[in-house]
Length: 396
Image 1 (cartoon, rainbow, N blue to C red):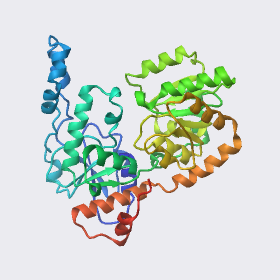
Image 2 (cartoon, rainbow, N blue to C red):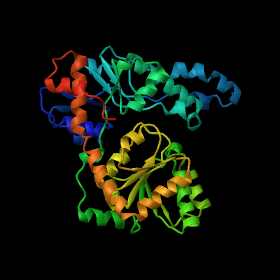
Image 3 (cartoon, one colour):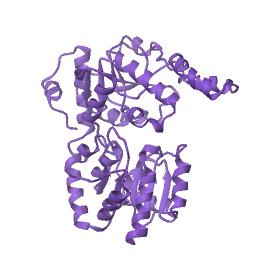
């Protein structure tokens, strides 16, 4: 999201200046995309580290029952939102846009982007500590914010219901495929990527970090069902960071005897990711919860047919451009994969619809949408374009 915004704001017209607040030693990922009316603003502080884990480790003699009882008290003191270090105030910023789920307290008007409240819907995927942390930090920054920004109308409804926020305070600003900010891969790049990862000739792609809710387990089960009951062998390539749940994904693949069909290439470069999309036969997104899916947009942009689950905002995002399935139904998932794998006419139709769908979402549009809100909140004079953008119904 931040790379897409930096790329678009760096090319936008107008007299506004956009500062990207970063830690001095943690900005290599964003710095190349900041230019034109954008510049870096470095904080003088250090990246915050919660002391709760240290407290628990230093109190190993405390029983789990006592620790659980004390957790709400400890969390409210440790997981409080700290004050600004003064960097944005000294820079005379008119507004602070918290694009991550973290933030700080400031008298400067702010926009907060909480992304989603997954912990309220799937508490089993979070420790008690993580759920408390999210509730405390998200609520604090939502209360402070002049505006709360969300990616889809589904997330807006959820925030209004779960946190009791005023409807007008929560504004929908759809994002766009981040791949548009990166150079497109050449034929040589495609060949190099295929060779570097020893990719099969045909495969479906699922780019996602291995969180439990991303539902790699369900996708693997569907592939085993296709092999065992329909005599259809489908290769799966997954990319993304491996986290603590990854061993369970590997173990599930072994239990299903899918080692020869399943390949996890890990976190890849932007160029390699684009190549993976273009080399894939289809993209399948079995996630159980999403605010919105970047991989779905990226599939549409890359001209790859896609299927996704029927949860949260995904049906609205997909429209008629992707096949839909219940993420808890391996049979439905297998049906969708089989159709994508075998029906060339369907694949062509979905690719055409996907390109039409995603053409509505560009980072230039997103940047101009946020700029209109920036100007509104800062009390600046709105242009006719700003007024039109702010009065238009949300696309998602």
